[in-house]
Length: 352
Image (cartoon, rainbow, N blue to C red; front, side, top):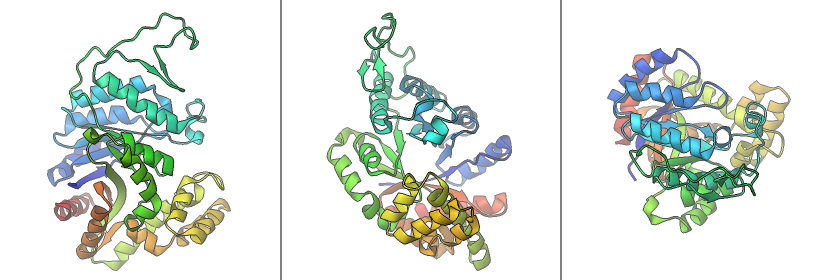
């Protein structure tokens, strides 16, 4: 599988200036950009602006929560984005979590696995310009009187002709059932806190089960991972960048969810860091965030990152490639824009 270099756009800062700078990254070989949403500005309007300002980059949502839009609306949005970008769009979706879905959107957080399956069926019907008909647990199209509707709904097909009848879909997933579903039905899946040497321990059985049911017409499943990069021989600068990764990891391992309900903590335990994961969570939930960050294993921080001399970064890229990673979304950590562009140029060269 050919590996691509991409990069995420941050929530913060001057968005227009960021996009002006994005063209510099496009010119040195960055082939994808992803915009997050969570409970910030919506990602779609920003990607529409990016589509107008770029020429070759793929445009990925990272990640649109399934609960905040109907599957049909997501399909229409993806078709519109694919149209204005000339076929460069990737629809990245995920379940998010009850804190955001119920707290910010006021929508019940239920059946995430089933909803992810239903989204695939509905979206692909829309893009094929079929009259959409779907009878699922969460979505019924058309909504009949028996379903609680007025009885006036009718099966419709999208008016416009989409650029592609199958826009690539990406599922954000780290739990075994979601990973299995991604491997069965989606073109791509995006885990988090990805350790390439432990891909089999964390995801192997789920990937194997999903691939066994996969339609060959989907092609190979591509793994999309987000990481941080700094190509430097300066040990002090490298350590500062690694420390930022350490704090970011502690936030998720320790603070994203309650005890027993933290998917990221469970993931790190599947990597083999059982005691460490418990310690990080205990410290973080006690408000001892600096100590929680210090407890994140150095080996884990380095394995997830592309930080250090070029030779070391090249080794880590090959580790990601060996783990079937198809897209590396690298956040450049250098202090200046010029240095960030140069690091991404070198990384694109390494990836090939």
